[in-house]
Structure formats: C-alpha cells, structure tokens
Length: 308
Image (tube, rainbow, N blue to C red; front, top):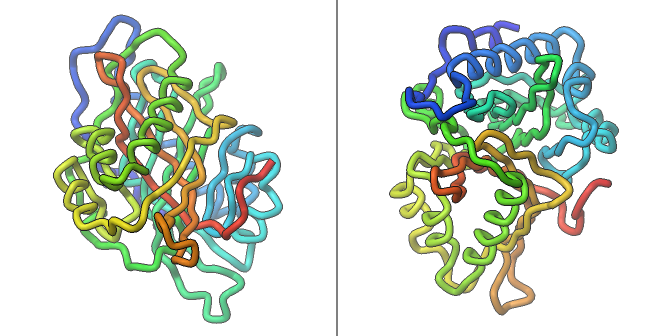
C-alpha cells in the first residue's frame, strides 16, 4: 500500500534526551522498531484485510473505535469486522511514535483514511488514531490498546502532517505500580475537570509541557494552546469520565488509560448530551507524577458502556 509505505523517511521524531537513567534503553532504537511494526501491519492489512489487525491485538487489549463502547479485543471481533471488513476500507500512516525508557511499551499516532461500506457513496473520511504497543519476550510488538476516530465531523488540517515538534519519549525509570498510578492520576484528572471551574484548569494542570490533543482539525500542542481551547467553555456544562480499570498498561515511565466520557448539562436534564470514550497516553515525571502527552476521543452510542 503506497500510502502506508510513505511512512518510511517522512515520520517526524521528537528530540530524545541523551541523559539516560540506569537500566534505560536508547528510545531512538525503540521508536524505529515501533514505526517499523506499525508500517508492517499497515502493509499486511492491505494484503490480508482486517484479520491482520485483529491478529495483532493482545487478547485483553483495549479496542476503541467510532460508534461503539470499549471492547476487549477478544470480545470485539464481531463489531470490528462489521465496521472495517470489505467492502469497507481503512488505511493509515504513522506520524510519530513515543517510547518508554525500558523499551517495553510505546505508542504510535497518525492519520487514517476510512471508507464506510455501509455508506451509499462510500466517501473517504480522514481520521486520527493512537496505537499503544507492548513488546513481548520474543521481541515482537503486539497491540495493547488502539483508538480510532475514523470519521470526524471536521476535516483534518494539512498542518498535522508537517509538524516538526512532537511530545518526547520517557526518560524516567522509577519502581512502583505504574499502571495503578496512571489510573489514579486519570481519576483525579476527572474529578478536577467536573468542578465548577470547568475542564480547562484540569487539562492544563495534567498536560505535559509538550502534551497534545489529537481530536481537533489541527492538533492542539502545549499547555498554552490547551488553555485557549477551553477558554469560554460553557459554565452550564461539564465533562464526566472515569478510567476503565479493566485496562491500562504502565512501563518505563510511560502508560495509557482508557474510559468512557460524557459531555453533560450541569442542571438541565433535558439538555444535549454527547457520549464518547478516550485513550490517554501518560508520561512520568522525575518526581513520580504523571502528565498526559496524547489524548484522543471517539464517539459512542448513548447507553453503550462497555464490551465484556
């Protein structure tokens, strides 16, 4: 597939720190391996179809895609096939990758092109994806979580493909329950976001200096842009979410969390409601705290709260 093969030689890499803690690996090599795995899967999916992607998931991976709740990969196959099997088509290209300091976890982000087989005209939708990968003892990367926002309402900006500044990889190796710490950070993030001050202060507080939100036509980068994004957020609405503790992985100063989210009225029960889900990628600071470096949501049907 030509579009996927364009990955090689065009992906932008954020500068990585040269000061590595004891036991850390060179993230440059890990990133190259991640991007190669992502590209190879894109080519295999073009050859074999959606089954190639399903084969790449860990059985208990978090599977998120438009219009559905969060599934475990081993229970989401039917819904995944219904959306992406022929005559539908889904192709993608990575723009960036981020890696853990121990080389065991990493995430790729990029753009997708989706034609929905259920649409009469089968128009092409340009979307965004995040894929988090875990490397096994055999050295093979497998998908631990994937988020696909395959049909956003607004057209993506070409600026996203030409970015030169991206979030950096982890350089922190601290002991502890990293998965649990990231889940707790997400829960506190949600608590602050629901307060009367609105979600803006919470997003600014938990964003890394190089944090990025991928759900807008032009990716939002850094705390200042995130603050501007939430300026004027309606006082009569709030965003409610909780991390789904069935899922999540943390390793080498990098982690991800997923969960369902709701945009709700504060007092009017008849007010409009929007329902979604998120995959948030976290990086650990040297002091042990956690900040998000990537965040992407996708819509779900009202009332659908989770796959088994």
